[in-house]
Image (cartoon, rainbow, N blue to C red; front, side, top):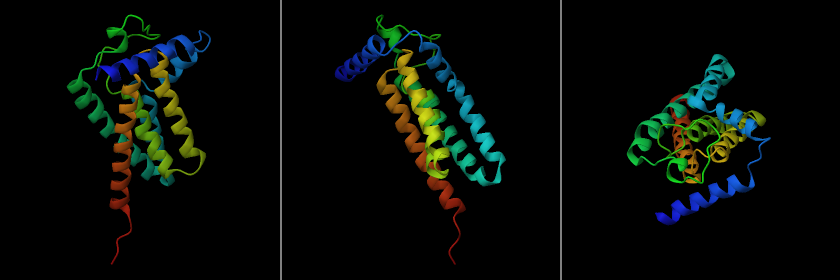
Length: 180
């Protein structure tokens, strides 16, 4: 486990030393803000539910988002209780207000991909791809800003992959035409 911890730390230090640029920090803060509390993704789910053509996608995305929240924020974070990078390593300088909850897994990443992966599966063309690009940016912002380890982000993505897959399959089975 110490080896994975060291790898996580080395990646974070590399990002901090080689990719951080003062001029880009406000951009990455704005990107991460879109993931705060999942508000952007909640609004997207509500908007999708409001229109007949996208209602099924919105309901599926909301189910994935809620499942991801429960698994990530209520179960895993408290069970693992991994400290934030800046709490363990003084070399890591967070560029936003220090989150108070545990680090593993990334809730921002989970919420973002929980909705984005449903959109990718259920919406046509760019409407499915754009949310995935934004989700990837939000996930990276957590590393750039120094508030998550890469392993946290990967775990958040994997939980979202699971919840989005289950939500899509459940929705397909529930609303597929019945065979007689």
